[in-house]
Image (cartoon, rainbow, N blue to C red; front, side):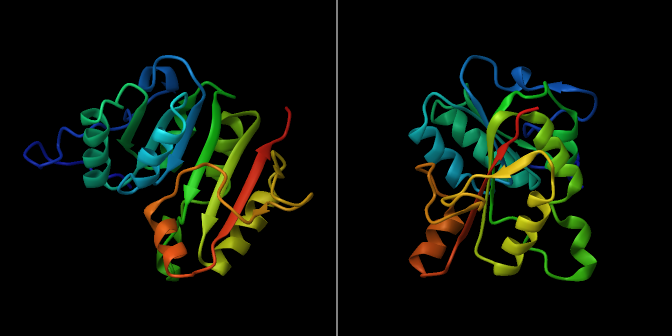
Length: 212
């Protein structure tokens, strides 16, 4: 659940995804160029690297932690990127269910999601049928869904969940597989940088939206 700050809260005026009703992506990121969405950008490392690597792209991050959504969105504005890159406070599961229009998003990213291990925290898991349905609806035909994790159990879970969804087909290094040896987007999240530096194996999965 997204935190609703009191008026005197230090981040009370942080930019947030609209609270209710249908939301047109063009009202958040007006202009031209393909749109990419990162679910859970945290402190924004990937957003800034991706903005530099792909200047033709419009980027939206949906971050449930109010502090980091506020800090990163303000940093984007200060660096002159606010016209094409935003991070808004939102629970992506709920926000994406109201976002439109259909088939308007080029790429979705999820970097090292779901750091919840206890059974009582299962309800916090971002990945699930509702989220996948929203991503499938929003992706253009041929659009990409990229997920990476350094937890083997999570990788297996994601492969099973995404692979079972009729809208997605694997698009990895080998035919029939979603797995990729390298990140092809010329941008990394802080967690990915740390995992590489520490020699930890990273499972990278890429899927494409099947034609409707």
